[in-house]
Every structure is written in C-alpha cells, then in structure tokens.
Length: 302
Image 1 (cartoon, rainbow, N blue to C red):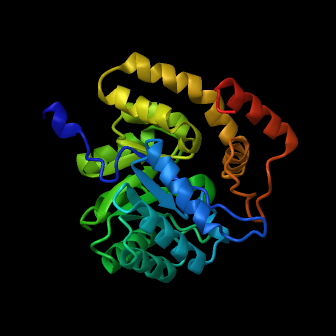
Image 2 (image 1 turned 180 degrees about the horizontal axis):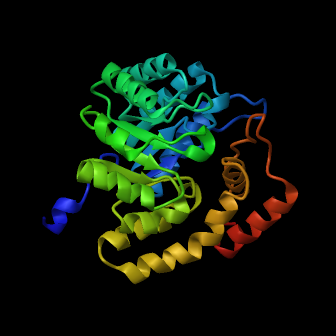
C-alpha cells in the first residue's frame, strides 16, 4: 500500500475550534458576540467551528438556545468555514431530533457524543448511533468518545460496524491515549477521519494517523496550533515538536479544572467578554487565574 493511501481525508478541515458560548451580564446567550467570536476564530486559522459541544456548555443550554446558536454562527460565517453542531444526548430520540434540526439549519456536520450517565452496552451504542445516522443521512457525523465525561466508551469494533452508514465519516478521540487512534485505524482503515480531542496530544495523535484537532486552545493560539499540524504534514517534525513543547504549559492550564472554566477566563483576560460559565460550573478561582495570567503574559497574549 502506498503512503498516500494510508492518509485519511479531513472532511471538516484540520483545525476545528470547540467554541465557547458567550453569556451577557444577565446570563443570557450573547448571540452577537458569538458571531464575532466565530469570525475571529476563522481569522485565526480555524477551518471549522463546533457550536454547543462540551466547551459550549451544551448541558446547560436549552435546545432553543442551541438551535439559535447554530443558526447565528452559520449565517455569520457563510462559506468561510465548516460549522458543526453538538447534537448528542443520552436520549436517542432527543439526539435524532437535534441532528435533524441541525441538518435543516444548514450545519455541515454534527458532533454526536457517546450517551452519558445511562452507560449503555456496546450493542446499545450501535443502535443509538445507527438510528441518528439513518435519521439524517445527508449530514456528516463526527462520533465523539470522551469516557471521562460519559462514563462509557464506544469500542473500535462497534465504530467499524457503523461505517456502513455513509455519513459516519469522522471521530473525535478524547480518551487521552494515542492507542485509541491506532485501534480505530486497525478496524476502520483510512476511511474514518480521526480528530484529536485533546490539544496536548495533537502531535502524538497526528503521528499515528489523526488528521487534525477539535481544539479548545485555538481560542488563544490558533495560528500556532495550525502550524503544528501543517509542519507535521510537511515533514518539518522539529518545528512541530518545538511548538508542541512550548504550548504545553498553556494546554495544562486550560485543563487545570473543568473545561470551559479556564478558557472562558483566558478569553476575558485577552479582551473577549464572554461571561462566566453557567451553574453548576463556576468562574476560575483566583489562584488558578493568577497562574493563567502569568502563562498568557509569558506568551505575549496579554
């Protein structure tokens, strides 16, 4: 097999930002600021924007708010970038309806997380994702595995079974290991586009076959993250490694506590008034904020 045959396509581009949801001083979604932020992120190198994922605080957004967020960002960006909607739920019927709505609202894809809390068996996961895929067959799907938040993990063998759904095209790998990428490629070959769900693992995951990243840090260092990916793909490994290493302190600080608490604080510090997270999440504490400020300052971001 030729080397080119081993490469997976990147259906949504190389760098997607899992965008925060901005709130105003009254705790309501600031849709105007969301549109501005989405355009800024594209200016900074994002090929796509994910709205209403984990970073977008989907657990505390109403479905109506999520729908309006998608429509706002889609209309604002036009054809400048791909727009994916977080449409996952631990209720199959809810996920189906949200995914169909996303398709009808012009989304380029849907990010569909493994069901949380009810911990379905592998057979249940196959039924769940197949039903969603069949309900919106024209909408490309990115399956999302993040066992640290959901309490269960979809197996590569089940993912391979779902590949007979033509719209199951990509996978966000957030288990914290590169082994997941290797196992997925063993089962699914190069037809499945695997995206790193962890900024700190972008370079290692690229090295074992990932095509890009769904990023949080790209809110702050989009050009550098994009450069890591481009340098790797161009064979400039030393350059990619250098950027990977100098960004690690920022990556760690952005996940020092529950995402999106730190990235919202960081955005406030660089001038984006995105508001605090919604309860039960809280603002970043003073000790962590001070450390974050030092890192942002050392990088010339503030």
